[in-house]
Length: 107
Image (cartoon, rainbow, N blue to C red; front, side, top):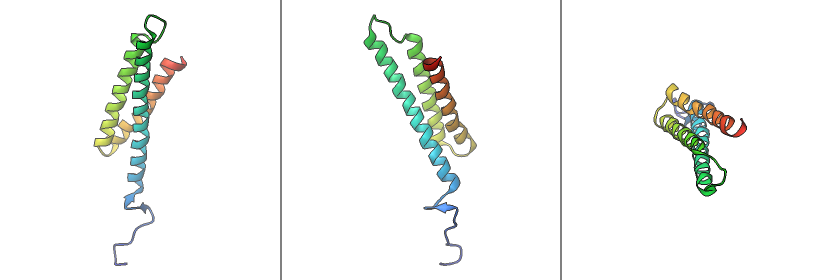
């Protein structure tokens, strides 16, 4: 190999360890954000299908929709930015999802 062209052990496939970790974090947070969107759609569908029978109310539908929009907004920021702002946006998706599940499903 020519000088300066060797592949250091901390690099895999041309990506640094930090870039790989960042990609994994964005993948995981994107999956959770998409899951919140599916959950919001399921709650809205349940509210419509329940008709006049007991089911999720307007507050539950609005709450799930607001959380899904917030999580997707954070995910877009994480995907389009780099550095600490992107990491923070991706990391904030997880407590948002946990708070949603705690408040609406386990409380």
